[in-house]
Amino acid sequence: MPPSTSVLGRRAAAFVLPYFRPPASLTIRQTSHRQTISHRDLTARPNRIRCCAATGAPVATNPNPPSVKPASGVDGRPNIIDVLESRGLFDASTSDPDALRELCAKPVGVYSGFDPTADSLHLGNLLAILALAWFQRCGHRVYALVGGATGKIGDPSGKSAERPAMADETIANNLAGIEANLRQVLDRSAREMKAAGDDGIQEPVVVNNNDWVAPMSFLDFLRDVGKYARVNTMMNKDSVKTRLASEEGMSFTEFTYQLLQAYDFMHLSDKHDVSFQLGGSDQWGNITAGTELTRKLKSRIVHGVTFPLLTTSDGKKFGKSEKGAVWLTPDKLSPYEFYQFLVRTPDDDVIPFLKRLTFMPLDEIDRIAEEMQRPDYTQNSAQKRLAEEVTRMVHGEKGVVSALAATAAAAPGSKAVLSVEALEAISADMPSATMTRADVVGGGILDLMVQSGLQKSKGEARRLIKGGGAYLNNGKITTEKLSISEEDLVGGKLILLAAGKKNKLVVRVE
Image (cartoon, rainbow, N blue to C red; front, side, top):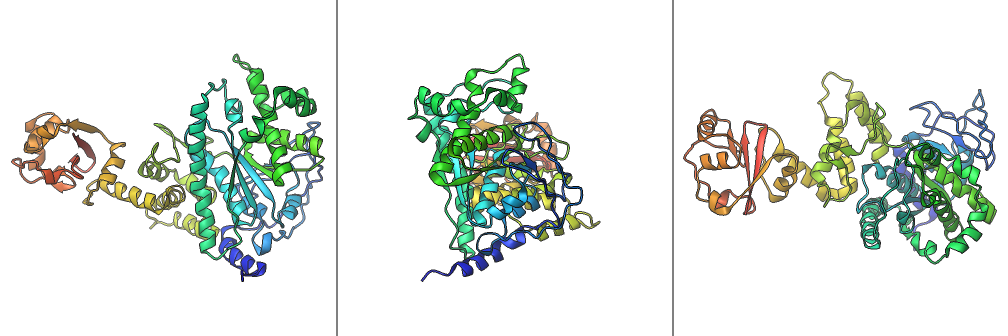
């Protein structure tokens, strides 16, 4: 016999409760379905007041907000609205947060969309995936939408120029890649909850909007959807106004993107009982288009919730390295490079990122924040914890082990035992040379150091060896007469040379 709902609730609550902190008081605003309410984490930043979607008039704020007891969540779990607020994942909503809190006391359907602009999602997309995962952990039904249809159009939000059109084969390949990213995190989160005893956790559902958009003709779309869209409202969206003011302008194709996304919300509401859409703050216009269309076509009130974009304390977007996007797919960015990007997080950002990018309990994050203020704090230990947690979430335990092994191998003065995986990982972050097996095996160390480019001359190489600063595979070279053997090739194809503790070079042997 399966455990009772109350037992499941107690198990789930015991697992999730440490991970959020209910707010002490909330700002209450009078609103209707046509007004929008902004409600940020009260401990992090002041509230922004959104405007009425219909009139542009600001919504009044109660100057004396009463203390509100948070509504309970599903089967004794914490309420998802409280969780999002306490972790800095709540930016604005189309309904009063207290009303949303009441709705989320029972299971709801929620979705977030991901267009196939590349064959992998990136670190910035992780916020949306985590927000879905928190809904999942709090007992709700989660839908991840991949944009097989909208990907053919391209979202103009935040873009100064129209996205280039992609071939159908490229879109199909990209869809497969981002679905794998979504399942990496959401499936792993579900397994963790089940392992903790919450057998009531629901598996994520991945849907493709091409399945319901493609069968619809252009005339059907104009008749059934277009007639309910007001052009003046569409032109008032931030994404549209920005592009219309630019030299590039906006094509009709891009202009209709918000209608397609709005139709997605209406369709999921109608066919899957989805009543919430999640998105970044830059998706506000597209989300409100969906709430309005659903109200007009189905006479049903649905809700939008946005989260702040992932930015550093100085306002810069977080999620791109010098080499480009921080991808979630290991074939595009190794777990080591992913880990290293997070290790370089500035001190001012590491605590907010621990709250937003991990499932760590808030009390534990508070302890780390306190430790960072102590004189005996070990530099970068908070960043290392952030990097481990996020790498584990995206790449699993194997990815963490690989990243830590590569980090140890690349550390100045490291004596770590090397592996092919570790050397392959760190080779992307350091100089490398390719040499033939005939030039390496049986040759002398002086020739190898010069031909690989580690040293300019044999004289320099001799002096380096004599001074004790030359290393082969993390072992100190003690004689200039050393001959390279097959045993010196890690995995039969790689050698790590070093001049001093920091100047390292990978030799690939073909």
